[in-house]
View (cartoon, rainbow, N blue to C red):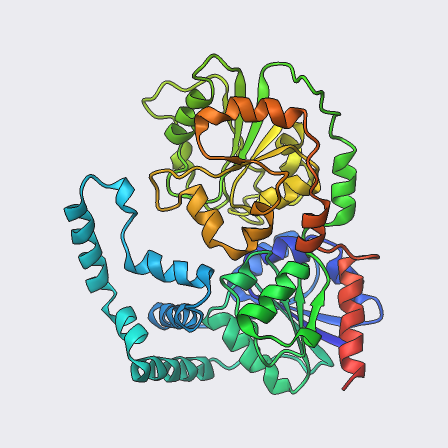
Length: 443
């Protein structure tokens, strides 16, 4: 069987080129790996495997227009609707000094987004925009090899992703679309109707594909995650020390940033001071999000707490200057923490997989990226929020009493985890290969 495997985004090369997924696909198959041309040098440093490269050229304006159309088309879904609000409205009223300033900002932002408002109101303008986009997609011709099946890994629905699907469908061979992120099916990826099969993380993402996008249930396959290997987490669990019911001071907290604008060294210094205001002894380790500017964590004039530690994940600058390497060290501080402050990040799921004590950061703070707002407006967090074993921190001053209780309490995540992510019996690559074989044989 001949397979075209198409990688569409930068973060995917860590999980696909740096693991055994392709090796499993290559057993009894010929696999042609395709990558964006801009990633060629990075891929060559990561693997000796022969890869093929494609180049797409879109105007930034047309790409933004397409993304706006996606959000409008899914305006009934909270995650997509929130993206529109961010474009059209200024920061929340709680973050500014007066209502007149808010109104001034709102009017200014609305005027700068007149095209988006026009697309929202007038159907003719919306249809005209879609025609422009179709023309732009048709301009970009790609020649993929003849194959028996095509696997497209998708993290984001932009013009590049659509052009790849459009070009690869010309081979008239079946397409398997793999949704590579836990959250993106509910906010960023619109599955192509041209796919013979859609691969998702778990039962939850299968529901999202059906409920949000009306993708046929009989074509949705739950294979798990390409980057959350069960063996990896089983091995990491063995390294976790048994948590005593009375933890000795200092109590180690782990906080995973989720890419919010307010995540700066000053913010976390104040947060830790709030936690220790009444003489408590908390130590806070902060994991910055990969997309966060490092200068956000440069020491300021504020006197920094000795109990605050900023842990930048290990980066291989030659292979990837942004996304961390996927090895056991990325979870080291999370494993050693007594309590994980759960944020709206995939790391909250990974903390659950490692059976860590978790308290959700559910505070309403003065920021457009308030943790409570993000949790409540992202559909994929709903099941975690509904888990009664995971308490919610609504005020910093409540952490002391919550920490004392959570140490005595065994949290149960199993049912939630089983819903969010599935694990293969053999391996992700093997199951994907078997699915490809099934799709080809059904033709």
